[in-house]
Each structure stands twice: as C-alpha cells, then as structure tokens.
Image (cartoon, rainbow, N blue to C red; front, side):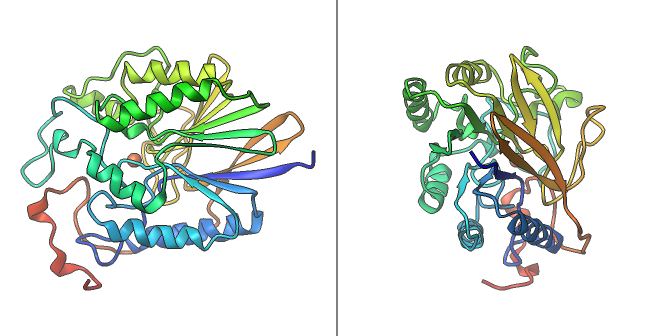
Length: 310
Ligand SMILES: [Fe+2]
C-alpha cells in the first residue's frame, strides 16, 4: 500500500476574547500548526483534547473550535480534555489554592459537561478503521468517576475486544496512563510534591483496566495530551507517546527526555511500520493577554475586562 500519513494534535486551547481571560498567542500558535498540517495534507487528524481553554464553562468556545476544525479539508476525530468538560474525579482536594481558585472536587467532570461536549462534537468514544489501521478514542476524563457515562463506556469497550483485529491499533486519551511507569502507584494529591504527577496521570483502578483494554484490542500506540510536553515511553511493547501542545509548553524539566517545545505529531504508515515524528511549530507567539491562570473560582471571573462583549 502507498505510504500515508495521519497527524495528532493536542492542547490547542485558544480561548476566546469574549472570556474573562484570554491569551491571543494560543490561537495564533494553533493557526500556525494548522498551516503546517495543511501542507502535510494527512488522511486524517486526531485531536487529543483541550480543544478549548474554558469549554467546560463556555459553550461558545466549543462551538467556535468546532467551526475552526470543520474548515479542514480532511476528517478529524476528537476526544474531550479536562478544559473542555471537567477534570478527572477525585474524592478529596489537594492543597488549598486560596479562595480565588476552585478546589479539586469542584473541578470534577459532570454528566452535564460531558453532554454539552457531545452535543457539539458527537460521540464521546469512537472507533474507526482507515487503510488497515484502527483508531479509537477514549474519553478518559470520566475514568474512575462512577458517572453513568463511565459504565456505558466500559460496556462499549468490552464490545471492542470482539472486533476484528487490524495490523495496527492507535488509541488516543487525554490524560497519560502513567508518569514514570505503568506499575507506579496512584500519585498522592495531598502531597504538594506529587500534585502535578497526580494531575497529569490516570489513577487506578481505571489505569490498569484501560491497559487490559489496550492489550486485548491489539494496540501498538497510545497517544495522550494534557501535559504539554513530548515524551515517549514503552510498556508491554505498547508505545505510549505524550504529545506536545500547540498552545504553550510546560513540565520540560520533569523527565530527562521530555520536550516542552510546541508542535504536533506526524505519523507515517509505511508498509508494516508506523513512523512517528515530532514536528515543531515554525513560528510561535508570545503576546500579551489578560485574566487569571489556573482554575479561577466563579467570583473572580470578571467578564467586564473581555476584549469582545458577548
Ligand atoms: Fe488537559
């Protein structure tokens, strides 16, 4: 078969000038990535979540990015990230970040947020086949949540095990399955030094259950986002690739082989091989924006400073 290409992007989160906070660099960085991807002209695009900065509270951010992605001349497949819906579930909060920031429990993803995302982008989980490669999307923000949608996901996942095997199977998740190794324990949200490790990984029991699903569905690559730092690990012969962000980089010093440069991943399917290449953005922007970072509490979201009035 003639070689062909697919591309993975994550953490675009351009935000909106109608919001209480906005950084104009991030939409410009995404538009740069888009120009580069259009030159590659892949068969399809995988979008690994955090498509919006605050889609969890602003439906219009989801709608704007849907229109933006719909303008692409090739199909794209999306999973939600925590900024599009809400965060992975926790039963107690980590360190107190002050009254101006939400607690971790307040950020737990809800059924309403998942429904809002689904109303705009379609199914929360999916599996398609293209030229002998199977692609599956896992809405991992809901793993370990106990929400009704989680039960529905696992029922669907069990059905996937009975599907015909393909030469390759690529899954996408938003959160990486682990930080250092598959068998590490859950990171401790209440220990400040482990907070980010907790924030960026999937907890057990869901982690190992997903791993069993990946193995049972003959997976060779799992691509995640969320961390904004490119990093490759292997576990049980599966390539776990954390994608770079297009918006902003972070956590470049967490691993000796992490790369927080902005970019996206290009995958070339050549014969029986899938070759992965990190593509850096040709140009990045550092413009002035406004508004607070983190996960601001509702009372500090000041829409009077928005550049565009809605
Ligand atoms: Fe994220």
